[in-house]
Image (cartoon, each protein chain N blue to C red):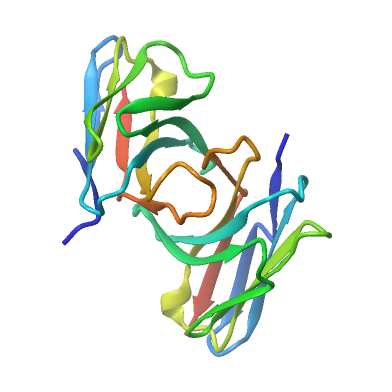
Amino acid sequence: KQEVTQIPAALSVPEGENLVLNCSFTDSAIYNLQWFRQDPGKGLTSLLLIQSSQREQTSGRLNASLDKSSGRSTLYIAASQPGDSATYLCAVPWNTGFQKLVFGTGTRLLVSP
Amino acid sequence: DTAVSQTPKYLVTQMGNDKSIKCEQNLGHDTMYWYKQDSKKFLKIMFSYNNKELIINETVPNRFSPKSPDKAHLNLHINSLELGDSAVYFCASSQDRITYNEQFFGPGTRLTVL
């Protein structure tokens, strides 16, 4: 059974800081890993998708890394801004051959001005 | 221009009622999903359809019945609503059923059962 855990559960930082969010998964036989952002009362926005053959994926100030062998992914946010405040979720497809995403528990980020 | 849309956004109803949530995607995707986010914000898959065919059916009470009239629509009908059904329900879609494709989510429907 695939289990996904995210640490920390909550994070509060001042604007401008660089920060790292962690995601770990128990079954390393994954096809990809997806990072999402969820704003309060809103849906999920896909941030980055890392294929199993990749080690990194970048989009603007976001950089996600994937280490399948250790069952870990990190999301690095550079020069954080108040607009980055949201809950960040990672998700992996469970190895059933279908896209059955298993979600992490989320990290709630607050960036203060 | 909304990629994945859901209606309604909010749904408040009494226990025992029957309700439906609609989902539509204009991305040309073949596969659609329903997820449930509970009060602790944990997201879990409920169903998945590929080209109108049910391919994933988690251990969901049979009071929940998804229906896909065509591959752009996946509706969720819930009979005899219970207090524990209160949650946010998200619809999503992906290009096809294989595990290499990104999933795109709708804005969610917040269901409150009184």
